[in-house]
Amino acid sequence: MTITFIGHGYVGLVTACIFADFGNEVFVVGHTKEKVARLRKGDPIIYEPTLKELLKKNLQAKRLHFTLDFQEAIPRSEIVFIAVGTPPKDNGEADLSAIFDVSRKLAKYLKRGLTVVACKSTVPVGTNKKIEAILLKHKPKGAEIAVASCPEFLREGTAIYDTLNPDRVVIGTSSKKAAEKLIELHKSLNGKRVMTDLASAELIKYTANSMLATKISFANLISFYCEKTGADVETVLDAVGLDERIGRVFMNPGVGYGGSCLPKDVKAITQTGSNLNINVDFLKAIENINQTAQKNLIQKIKRYSPGKKIAIWGLSFKPDTDDIREAPSINIINQLLELGFKIFAYDPVANTNIKKIFVNKINLLTDQNKPLENADALVILTEWNEFKQTDLKNIKKLLKYPVIFDGRNLYNPQLMKKLGFKYFSVGRKSVL
Ligand code: UGA
Image (cartoon, rainbow, N blue to C red):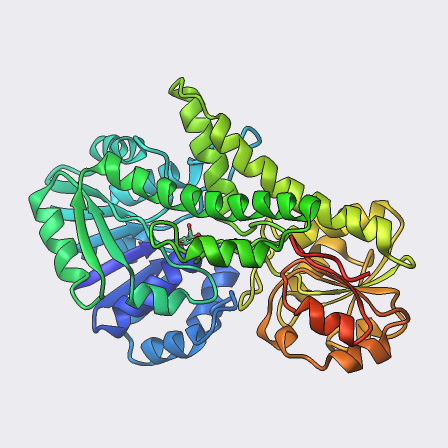
């Protein structure tokens, strides 16, 4: 099949590479000259494990084409995926301007006969109907369209694995022909097929992300109870998670969820609910707890840090990505700077992105051990693998005081006690 992706973020680029790898001819339309030039040379722009190799392989095979020109891609395509960003507006609503803009642009170049236009971007319920109206208004005579909603469930850091092995492929459309074409395109992917209508497909995506955020905030809420009562959050959640109705996955307490999806989507579904006159107190609580999780860590640092020189490990919003959008690290660093702390930080891949935000306000180091030298305490914000089994005795040697604030519960408190650390983690007894 010949298909087009409009947008080359995590969703657009990863999915385009995978469909190209299956032997399809894939066009990717971007809107920044410099980025398209980099992509053509095999530079994925974003950091995602093994994406570079997949990109290069399919560029070399000439199955993957990057362009700025809608006209080069759209008239040849049987399916056009919209995969542009829907960032939050100030009021939390999803900004759909890019979606509507590309819909207008692509409509002009639709060929005679049927083109399936499928939206992969996360959009509030009702948006695909608006896309359909725009396409119908701007399409040339003789062009037919069928609109579909195909939400994406990949996670950053494991995007390629997730795309190849989704739990489900959701296809929302009222067009039989569109459904058939999309089923055919997705046939090499694992996972169950969910065939549904547009509105349900749109809502499935928000339901999934707000449920995931709920699990995290619930785990954090229970961690607050544990800290006040001396209970141990990991034991509580492990025990509760043994109940198959509840489960243990995605219930890790910490400094809260970040990234370009969960925070934005919880805000957007809250806003949609308000617009529909639905009581959204529950959704608001998810976000409040997330913010409290960050405040708790800052309180601990304020109270127990022996000095103002702090080392930080982990800046990306989660491991295996250089993405810092809505990363807890940004808020926490800002607060610590306001409190007069001096920061020496390290992240395996996100230093460059963090530098764009803080410029010279913090010191970024490329060696994991460097920020520790003579620092008054270490703060851990992202659970990169390389921090998990690091040489704790060496940390103790390098720090001025053996104090760790662990926002991701990486180490065993008993062991930390034995090694002579003061150790503050989340929802577990502090080692004082
Ligand atoms: C999320 C969803 O997991 C994907 O299914 C979805 O496709 C994607 O959003 C999207 O909408 O595009 P992602 O943002 O890549 O994926 O990252 P997650 O793995 O969901 O992690 C989000 C945040 O939650 C991270 O900051 C992570 O540290 C935090 N988290 C995760 C916790 O604090 N505790 C947990 O138990 C799990």
